Amino acid sequence: MARVIRRARTPRARTAAAIMATAGLVLLAAACGGSPSTTGSGGSSNTGGSTASQSTKALAFAHCMRSQGVSNFPDPGSSGQFNKVTLAQLATNNSRYQAANHACQHLLPTPPVAQQRNQAAQALQFSHCMRTHGVTNFPDPASSGRGRIPDSFGIDQGSPRFEAANQACGKYRPPYIPSNAAYNAYARSNGS
Image 1: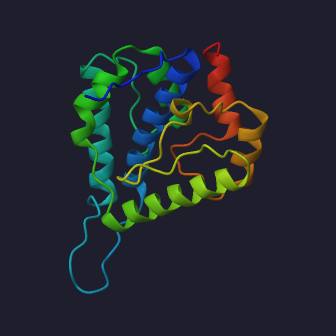
Image 2: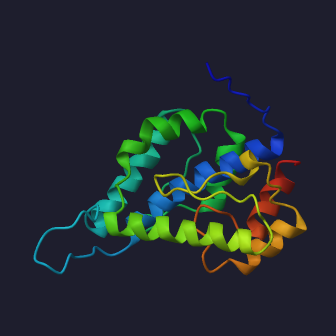
């Protein structure tokens, strides 16, 4: 029987986990704001609907979050997107955020398959770039294509080495990985 060893999460790891969860939400919300794509073969594509429909879904998500105990959850902007800084602050400062996010996820549209593949490829390029630039233990994305939380692999996102690599690999950085400035702002606001 295999034994699982779990490390205690530090405040910095909890902050990073909240940032990643929020960024995942922002990534889904951002998928709502794009224009519908077509398959080019006359078939239908899974685009999540029109921009108006996507904005309606994002608004329903905001209402759901408030009904689940995140009373100050904002409505999306006119494009159907949420402000990721605001969401990150809510995620780290509201104990009900994660449960509400889980309960309301079904209201957000799923990005098209092609977009999911592009995001997975981008996450893989970012991982390779980070390792090339000195963060040798930066993990590849999960089999789902989603990136992993660097802190859970013992990576200090505030270290000079990580910041230099994150800057150098910025063109590959997936939307759910914060920039150095965003990460440092969250760390400062949470006393990490």
